Length: 309
Image (cartoon, rainbow, N blue to C red):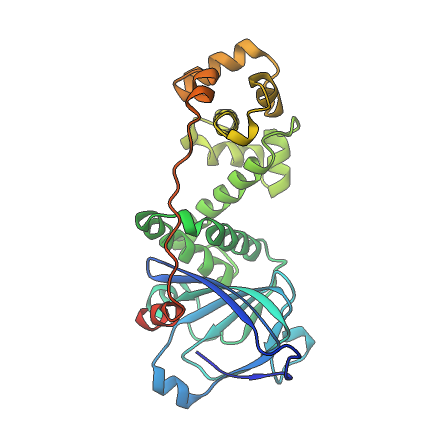
């Protein structure tokens, strides 16, 4: 997509690692490499015909305009936008970034101004930008396990959230994507704190800067916040019981690790939600299903991007 020039000859030679996934009509990837410049000339634009929008989070190092000041360079958490239909001259330090390549026709209808974002830095201090960053990181981590239909279902909310972060406000057409992403971020927070006895509606609402009423509204489709947390804790117990590496822990120890201190109430709740007893799960040594995506060839990354229109 760019003509590049290394900042200086690396002592150990050029190195780069790129991981990518095609998710419906989006391409999501991560790149780690050395300092270099990125040029996209009018000649290159006319030659390859790409007009995608490239959204990047530089999680290590930074990127910015070559002719810009310090305020026009990214800091960790900032969003950097490249419009591939426009020329640019940028430079990056040694970096690791997260990239989302989006066909122009999918994103520009959601933007307040479609053509004013090339080489733009959007501050990571904006809650909407942080939400987009967390969403893309989670999507990248879960991509190897996603089935094609799951990936397709995530395209629309991802586009809506990206547009909202770029616009700096929630437009009506992007509202559902923001709600979906906020719900996803809260769900990941709950998953990380299932063993915390202090996990509560108040603590979660405070962590995300929303009211308890808003939190309860978000979890209405799951029969309420408390019901959702209970189900997640029971599912975590089920996974632990089915894990051969945790056979040294008895049922009571696993239940207590996820906040269940009364064995009888745990047994009743577990059987009601899981459909079998904890001992039955352990004896069957049930394993969760997950099929990693096959490895793609190195040239697939470029061919995916070229096919996006």
